[in-house]
Structure formats: structure tokens, C-alpha cells
Amino acid sequence: MSRKRRPVLRARALRFLALLTLLCAINSDAKRDRKFSLLERKRDKLTRNFDARSLLDLPGDAVPVEARRALRRLARELHPDAFGPDTPLALRRASGEVLGALIDAERELRARSSSL
Image 1 (cartoon, rainbow, N blue to C red):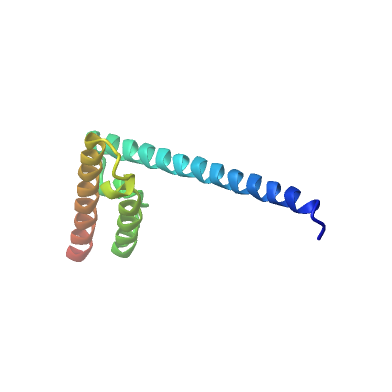
Image 2 (image 1 turned 90 degrees about the horizontal axis):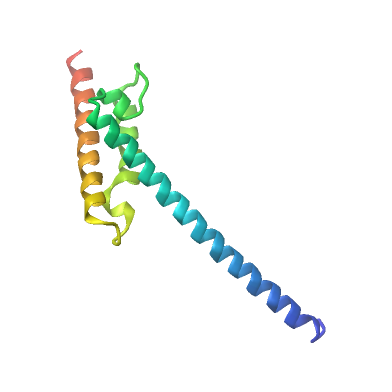
């Protein structure tokens, strides 16, 4: 490879790394915004007294195993630690409140299915 071409490739590599860094920053903000909107939707469902299945985003004929999977999926996104350490305390509390309601909803569905 010629010496003339090396600076061009190095500049291209640096631009590519800068682009990747930018894309990662954009994606992380989009992911955080998605979590905030999910938290907002779940909190709205709590205030409107939705049933356990709709709170866990389950169909009417869901079995307890599906409820457990839904709980784990939602907990992964809505756990207070998932928002990061710089998240305001009010959001962390709201996240804990919603997570507690999701756990109660999953327990309720499990109890209903075992009593049948």
C-alpha cells in the first residue's frame, strides 16, 4: 500500500468510527425514549384500573407461563435500574410503582389459573 493512501484510509476509518459513535448515541436515546413512553402507558393503565391481562399486554387466553414471560420482558425494560443512575428520583419511583403492579398482576393471573 502506498504511503499516500494511508492517510486517506486513516481519515475514512476515523470518520466511520465517529459515525458509529453517533449512531450508538442516537440509538441509546431512542431506546430510553421508548422506555419512558412504555412507562407512561403502563402508569396510565394503572390509573385507569385496567385488568391484569391488559397490564401485562396478554391476550384473553394466555396461560401462566406467558404471564411470567411478559412480566420478565416488561421488568427488563421498566426496572428502575434500567433507566440509569442519572434518572430523576420521581421517574425511578414511578418505575418501581409500575413494576410492583406488574408483579401483582402476574401473581393474580397465576392464582386465578391454579384455582380453576
